Structure formats: C-alpha cells, structure tokens
Length: 182
Image (tube, rainbow, N blue to C red; front, side):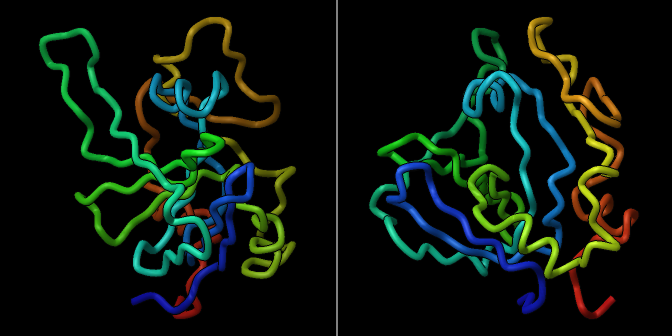
C-alpha cells in the first residue's frame, strides 16, 4: 500500500461531499475531449488525475455519492455500458472521481474537484519541479471534439486518440512522479 504521494483533498460544489486520497500522479496535464468527458464535465472536457484507490477516504457525505456508468458507442450495434464508474454528488452534480475495477489499485479524481491541488503540488514537488506556466497540456481524443470546442491556450500536444504515455509514465518521464522511494 502506497504511503507516499501528494495528499489531495476534494469536495463537491455544494459542500455535501468531502474526500481525500494520495496520488503519485497529481499533475493536471491531460485534457480529455471524448464525448463522455464533454457531456459530464462540460464542452471543454475533463482533466483527470491519478490516485491510489486504497487511500480514498470519504470524509463527509457518502450518502450523496451516486454512480454513472457511461454508454459506449451509443446508437450503434456495439452499444454497451462502460465498466468504469463516474462518481458524482447527487445534490449538485459535481464529478468527483472515476473508478474502474479493471485497475482496482487506481482511482482518477477530477482535477476541478480537488480543493488543494496547487498547495499539494507545491508541497510534494516544490516550485523547481512544477511550474504551471511551463506545463505542456496533452489534449487527447481530439477526434471527438466538435468544431465549436476550442483548445486551451499555451503549449500543448494533441492526439486524435489517446496520448503516447500512461499517467504514471508521463509523470516519471517528466520527473514529477511523487514517490519518496525514487
């Protein structure tokens, strides 16, 4: 069980749900523009972080957490329900995290739900390793993006499908993986 990692503290918009977890992959570098992320998070897509699922603590409001399983390939012969679970507040609809039992050790909090992200990154990495102004945003599933959706300003890499690195690989390659044993 990982004992190291950045301590992330999150909540929903209305304050009914509060949670915390540890993350070795806390840098918000990847923007997903798939139809699911755009439908549940807004037209700009979503930025997911990585976390250690066994460290998730629901501090408040467990009774207000609902789960949505997305429909994949809607209106096609291949239509099916996704294995992943998008957890959200049933009172205000804030997306909290994504969990998929195919990778039980992982959980993916939605970056906007994390209240202390800048402070957690500063504490875990220090300003010399994390400078948001120099961050190259990786925009994935660009082939799903309608024309009216604009990509964010600043340096970026775009991919029609998924990027070339996993969350963990990207963090290690960029020397921002949070693990004291490295």
